[in-house]
Length: 221
Image (tube, rainbow, N blue to C red; front, side):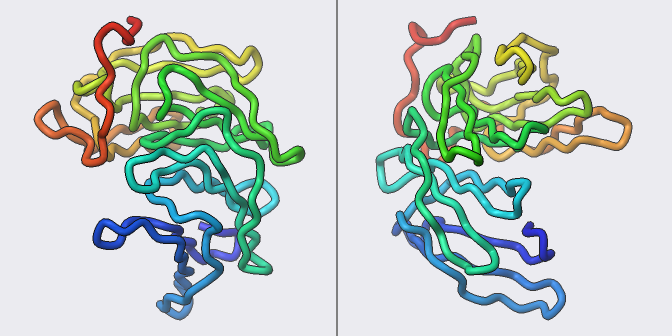
């Protein structure tokens, strides 16, 4: 959702063809309109609304390859501009805006995580996870830390969670997730400060774009 109340939909996969096209939905008129296209075709991107109203699209997939590049959407001009690339190509990842204005990206490349600084347009690696997992959820908590919960480790649903502290740039293990929340789960911060995790898949359903299951030797518990 943009600051105007319109909704931006970017990229995707149209009958197995990765696309650059983007659209805007206007709830006031209940209409869709074409807007500026991405510079690179990609699906499964993260799209994060920045404090200044721009949208950061990072990573994603193009065919069998993950992308490291990123770009910014400017609502007044309806155009995309290439910005700094991530240190690692990432697909099946997640992103969240921090209170500092930076964007935290997790997943898609082993245990590494990184931060985007919109003032400089650059990425920097930050603390590494203790476990390699993808398709996790990221939730900014009321105290400014970030909860990563659910997802997949290798070919199995991940039932752990971790907390990221922006002040120290480190991750710490947190409580076990009780249900199966693999591909496509949601995590919602409630008014009482708790996080509601819902939906997702179990071990019988692998992520539909999973291409490189991680060997057990690469998993660190």
